[in-house]
View (cartoon, one colour):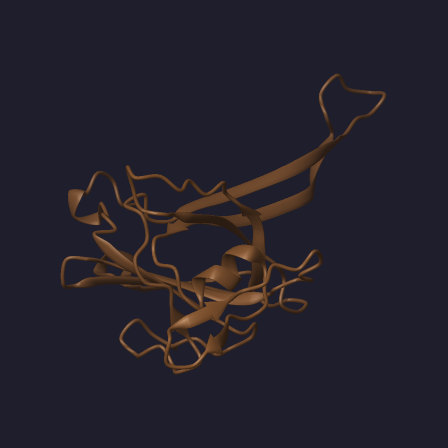
Length: 191
């Protein structure tokens, strides 16, 4: 039993978000480098990453009781919401659901990205890491998921363009974890 221990309070002081193809192996611990298949998304808004976990349940009612005899889950959802502040060949297709940026005029820095009416499903693996000081390091890996919501984009002179997304985790295979937390944190040691 932990009790009240202020040394177990975590602040995600700074962090990074990575993308890869679904099923790409993630680092096995919190000190290993992300492999070359993982692309860092760069700067994100100060909101960081918001995790969401929702579930829908159904009650099994009986003739003999006024309260449910049992409650079962009919749906579960794990989401990560964040806003990307950089516009590049990784963030734009991720926001719009797939495709690729193409160079159309070599040596002129002229590129195009075409948004298709049916982009298909752009499944990705997602990695999030954050540190709290120098001793605490967390990583969260979703082996398979996709952007299910893209926020409205504001183009104005009062702030940076932000590509806000909600990424929803999907099962990668039967009995495989939906996501994995890796922690370098003494708070989880055996007591």
